[in-house]
Image 1: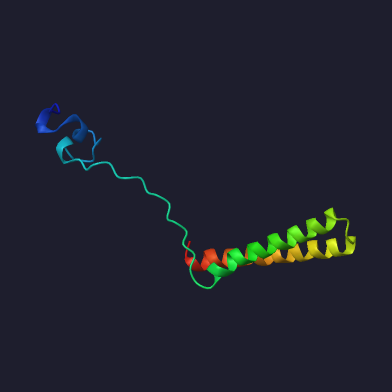
Image 2 (image 1 turned 90 degrees about the horizontal axis):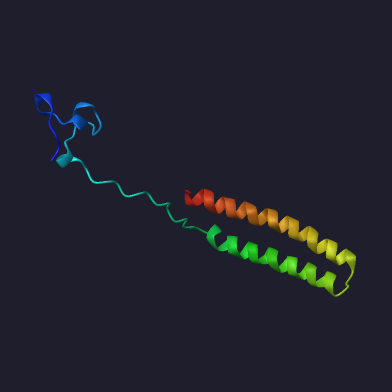
Length: 102
């Protein structure tokens, strides 16, 4: 039971600790907010994983070519394609996030 002072106010209410509420009328603690799940929607949602997969395939093809001792020109060509495809994949992923509203 809160101790009441002069004029019937509790110390907490008098000094503004509870914003004018008594202990019995205080609202329960709020639940912490959770981050919304990122839900990708639209045509970009299918293109994002496909583009990442294509980048991975080109990377593996370039590494395989280097490991087996293949032509360095082919390896350089594959790595150049990988860089271009990575740029496209990043653009697709950013467009997906932008158009999904997150």
